[in-house]
Length: 617
Image 1 (cartoon, helix red, strand yellow):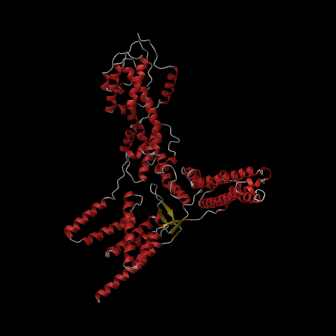
Image 2 (tube, one colour):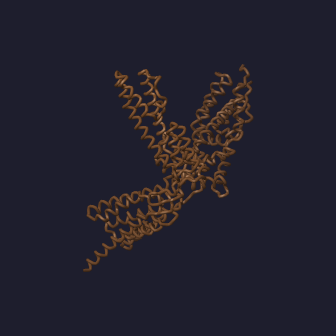
Image 3 (cartoon, one colour):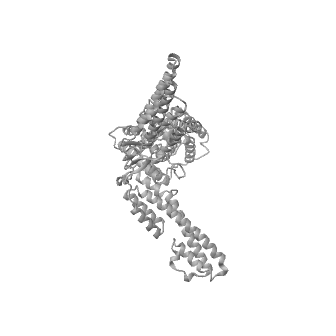
């Protein structure tokens, strides 16, 4: 006779009670979907907040980061848009898991949108914000399913489990229930937590089939184990068989939200169908491909000047390749044909992209930016990043100064001069004092000439390296301080005080405080949408002239027109891929491309008219 025994001991009972409290509010995916859809409405405070900080603060954060230390990310993994959005801290202030899931998906949507990608399962699955939520959620679902599996096994072995929901017992396994365990008191552990997630798991035929096989196999060995052991062993096997499917819930949840995400349609591709139709009509009916080419060129000129989206993967690749081929071919072709003026204009077209062409006051850090969620991200990137320029400089500085003092101390101990050394020789940056003191010991310790000469040689090398590091750090700090708010300057001062010796920190702090904020930030031409479009059109016109196409005047006129638009005070700034462009106020402009377009147009039209006059004669 099997001895009556409780399946859970006192400790296990306590743990299960804790878990039951934690799982009292299981995730309601339908409710989460409603939260998610509400964020697309103007009345949603969270949705409005996210849209505002992404469109206004994210571009400023990324511009300042690139301006201060460059665009390269010296981290173990390259940062992407999703990593930037983590700074929004979407889970702060949430009262439920439904909100947390909805907010994670909403930011995954923005990650897709900012990268001009379709909102799909892969975008959601790779979102760092969603993964932060799901890793915790998966742990809870695993615990819930483990409890469910234990109750289910007990039920199928004939025990009374009143709390087990009937809808969570698949029809395919109900007929497997057999009264195999008698005179045993079982305490249920499943409390209805994560019922929706478990239902999704049970909807998979593979999970149910695995359940059937495990139960049938376990029922054959009921006499081999005590009831508690049998139930625990069988439920553990059920759990292990379904674990991979629990991890697969990520796909199921992601797909549910992808399906309900509002779709944004783009009709830019329609123009390619129009071009195909034009080509067909021109080739087969009109027998006039020059007219079709002119219409195609005019349409593309309008598109480049008005609608081109440089952040789009398609536009970026197409027009990037067009520009590169056009200018390289033009420079080479005109040079080989000894048309040096045209070749020079083609070369200057490339150079003009990188010359400082615009000035704006809008990109200097405002004091209000310290309230932005991206301010802490900027501090982390610039000041706290262990692989950042400031941290690396500080590390190298301290390594060299510590190495210097240690080498000096070792030499003094070897020469037995410990009691006569001035205190200033042990100050980190007093390389010259250490060199002077040791050099004076040569006459007294001629037998140690090699050791003394070696120290002096390496100490001079360390001193030069430290001076180089200080100069590099000072340049960085001055550049940063020139566009910084008062709070950011204070953060820089706190950094130098914590990472450099007292004298150096004081020197750097004074430099930071004395650095005046610049009134405008200068920008290269390729950062401004209109300027970039005008440059592409000019390159295209040069290319067509090289090929002797008279239609070259179309993109040339477009280049002049768009160059004139670039003189307006409000311009669109391109920051980087994956970050929204931002409209800024322009205080000064140097219209290099407009000048080049006018000069090229004058020379070309003049030479064309000259040729025509010669042909008439």
